[in-house]
Length: 278
Image 1 (cartoon, helix red, strand yellow):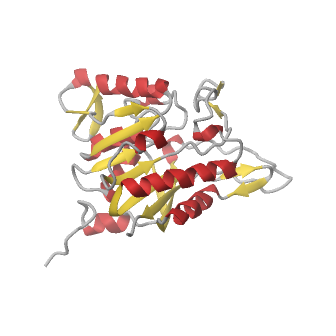
Image 2: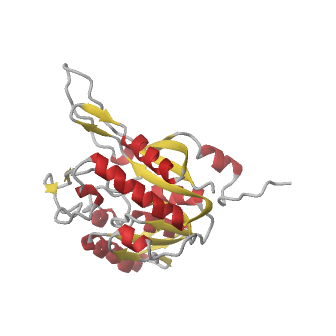
Image 3: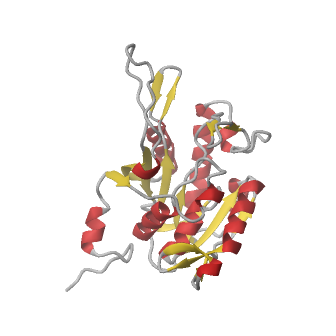
């Protein structure tokens, strides 16, 4: 007798493939990339769809509290899941709603509406601070929390134009997680966020966070590990980490300290897999 799949709709071989801790992808820019790239730190919707497909079943609810321009919500549409997102910056909410108005999902691909028929990108994105908005949701109402928080901490990103994108992380508001004065304060906010994520998740379900490591003041900072440790304090169990890198959009290697000392080109991000085992 075939064993019941309690978590997702994948076959055994698909499940096994997804447990590889090295997660190398080659997703080219999709049809919405020219809009989403204004954010500067967005993730491919196809990546988010793969993550969502492993940690949920069809029509289950995925929450992204740091939704940005909606990569997770578009991924939910690709995967046939329901989604809900929160985003502090109204500029990113506006871009996501433009995508909703102009694009659909057809046979697992995002296409402009005028090119055919398909499913809408229906997940709502609400503008506001995630901690306040999460408190408005019912406890135990979410099947998975999948998100990419702003972990830069006063980090300024150089965009495609070569100019620094100072609007990316709401520089004028202390509410943004990226505007805290140091990483200690950021980790404190992560713990507060974790308590709300724990409350919202159903039992035995997962919190998935994409967190990159940093190089700060001449020292490697294992930020993914530090975030995971804070979330363990809330009650989550760390089940594993996948090291993700998208080869299609990987930044070129830079000659940091060549001939002087070892400085890493950090080309991967950590996908933290945490479970509410209670």
